[in-house]
Amino acid sequence: MALLKKSLSLLALLTVVVAPAEAARRTALSGNLLIPDKDDVFIYPQLAVSHLNEIWFDYGTGQADGSGLMLFGSKTFVAGVAVNRAAVTSAVGERGLELLRHHGTPGGDSFEQSNLGTPGSGFVAGNVTGAFTDPQTLIDVILAFPIAGRNKLGFRLGVASGARANQPDGGDIEAEGEFALKLQAGISLANPSLPVDIGLEIGFHSASDTDGGELNESGSLFVLGLRGRAFSRMSDRMDLGLLAEIGFGTSTIVHDDPSDTRNQTDIAVVLGAGPTYKLGKSTVNGHALLGFGSATFEPSTEGEKDIESNSQILLPGVRLGFETPIIEQYLFFRSGMEYLFVIRNFFRENGDIESDREGSPSFGWNAGFGLVLGKFKFDGAIQHSWLTAMPTAIGGGGNMLAIASASYDW
Image 1: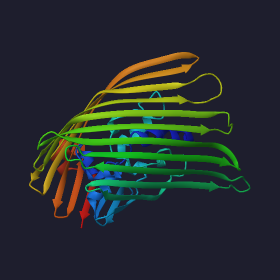
Image 2 (image 1 turned 45 degrees about the horizontal axis):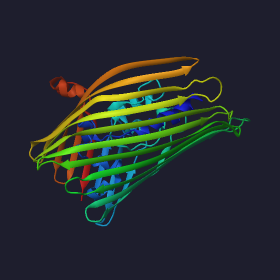
Image 3 (image 1 turned 45 degrees about the vertical axis):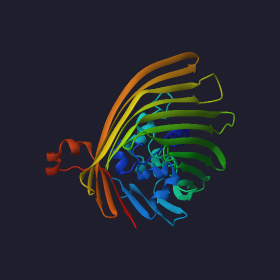
Image 4 (image 1 turned 90 degrees about the vertical axis):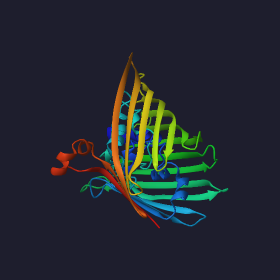
C-alpha cells in the first residue's frame, strides 16, 4: 500500500515542477536555463529545428546509466528518437532523487529548489520505488517544424509501460502494472527584440495491484506544466533573460475499500530574471529566482479530518554561470553557482491543529569543460573533489567526471 502511494505521489513533483536529466554542459552550469543548451529540446521540443542532423550521447557512471538522442530530417521538419530517458535512477541524478525523497511526506521539502528549471525528460517514477515493475520506455520521439519564417513548432511523445504477474503453485495470480504517458508541445517566436520559447507538458500515470482478480490498490496521476523563456535585447552584448514556470498535479489512490481513498494536489510557480552577456565566444549570466510551492495531502477520506499541507517560498534565489574559451574554438571552461533560501510552512489538522515554520538556505556549485574538434564535441562535469584536490587526484584514484556527453553533427 505505502509503496503504491510513493509510486504516484512522488511522481507528481517530478513531472510537474521539473524533471530529470541534465547532461554534462548544463550540469556544469548548475542548471542555468538562461545560458541556452542543446538539452533545451527536452523542455521546448520545437528547438530541435536548430539541431538538424545531430546525435548526442550522455554517459553516467555505469554502463546502464545514460541516454541518447538522434535528430534527423530536412529543411521542412526534424524528427528525433531518444533512448533510455525514462530510467529515473540513471537519468535524474542525485538532485532528482532528493526531490523524490522529499515529496514523500507533505511535511518534507516538496518544493526542492535545486532542481527547479532543469530539463524535463523522465516521466515515470521507475525503480526509485522498488515496489512495482519499472515502466520501460516504449516510445520517446520528437517532431519539430520551422513555421512562418524563423518561428518553430514542436511536439514530443513519451510512452512507458511495465507489468508483472506471478502465480504460486496452486495459488491465485498476483499482478501489478504501470502505464505512463507524456505529451509536450512548444512554440518559439523569433522576434528580433524579444525571442520567446514556450513549452506545454501534459502527463498521465496509472498503476494497479491485484491479487486473485481482486483489486488491492489502484491509482492515477495527472500533471500539467507550462514553461516560458524570453530574452529581451538590451544592447549588442547584453540580453535580459526572463523565466516563468507553473506546474499543477493531482493524484488519487483507491484502496481495496473504494470509500477509502487518498488524495494529493501540488502546485508550484517559479519566476526568474537576470542579464545574459555575450562576449565573443564567452557567455556570462546571473539571475534571481522567486518561487512558491504548495502541497495538500489527505491520507484517507475515512475517519477524522487528517488533512496535511505545506507551502514553500523561495526568497531569494540566485544563480550565476559563465562559459569561456581557454584555447580559442577548441577548449572551454564553464561553471555555475546557486544560493537558495526557502521558507517552509507546515500545517496538520488531526484532532489538534499543528503548524510549523522554518527557513533553510542552500548553496552549491559545479564546474566542467568542453572540447570541440570540428563537428565532434565532448563535455564533462568535473567531480567536486577532483577539481579542488587536483594534484592528489592525478596521482591517486577517484573518478574525474560526474557525467560526460559527446555529440556529432553532419
